Amino acid sequence: MLLNGIIAAVSVRTNVRAAAAVKKGFHQWLTQTSWRKRREPQRLCRQASTSRPPWRILFFGSDGFAVESLKMLLSSSRTSGEKLVELLEVVTLSSDVPVKRFAGENNLPVHTWPPEGVDGRFDVGVVVSFGCLLHKTLINKFPYGILNVHPSLLPRWRGPAPIFHTIIHGDTVTGVTIMQISPHRFDVGPILSQELHQVPERCTADELGTALASKGADLLINTLQTLSERISSKREQSQTGVTFAPKISPSMSWMVWEEQTCDQIDRLFRAIGSRIPLRTTWMGRTIKLLDFVGKCHISLADERRMFVPGSVSYQKESNTLAVCCKDGWVGFKAVVLKKRLSAADFYNGYLHQDLKKRKLQQTADGLFVSKKDDLKHSRREKTQ
Image (cartoon, rainbow, N blue to C red):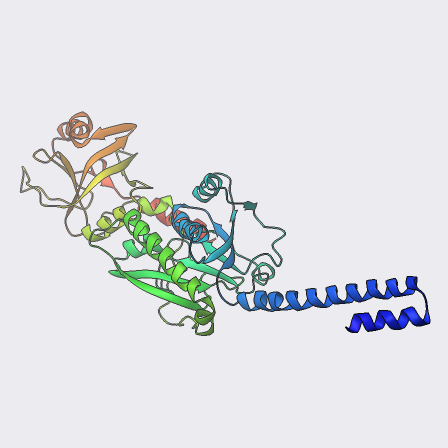
């Protein structure tokens, strides 16, 4: 009725062309007003949804440990029900790492480091075993910051190798931590959630890593489900109980028989043995010690003979090379001296011949010798 009245009034005072123009303008006004009314609730609703799932996530990772968390995020993005993840993309440091391969196999977009064009595209970042410090400018591009899945109960074992140091130091309890990344330093940010894990007896670093990767992925999903609440109740890390877990290195694999106990050697092997073989020297040559069997109870052919750390005894019954250390004997089933040799092959081809030549006289040349001098020299070089 309003429109007809306007048109009638215009028709009386002007002409038909003017009336048509008014009619057209009125329809445009109605269309724009109706569009704004429909659009405004959607815009307000989108703003509100950013405080809860589904999240737009940029994932930073490299190794197999990180793949477990990426798998869980991918599953959460492709579920048929209510989604936790709306968008998932990946950043890697290298082209030949498990995370890059997994992303390619599952058609996930991959960014090279440092990532570009991420402004406003993601709500939160997730870092798992990435190995590179993130700068403040990058962290600030994510409204909810960047989360880190760390395989220890922070602040214990900050650094790149917490699982190895957990085993080396004989921890019986460890866990996983979800924290917010802070710029400039590794593993110092506020904690959002933690979960304990009992370390099984005689567990290897590989076995513990597999368990913590799964537990960390589950805890990450749990944290993302209530991320806003977790952030509001986050807590700073304690200043007490801080320990550091530097990278493992080949220098850690040298035996110091007179200083290391049976338990220490056992933990060292379980921590690094699958990656770096334990090593010693014999007759001036490096020997790699393989197939560790733990503490040995040995039978000695000559009980009057004096044994010192580094002494070697071949145990025929178990086909084991037993080596004397600080508080007992430890055994190995194989060694590498130019090539892999069983304990029997090493004894028959090398050790027995040397003992016959020396008429069972105990000399330094017949022992497994620690490279203490070389280790001290290496440590001095690192501090200079």
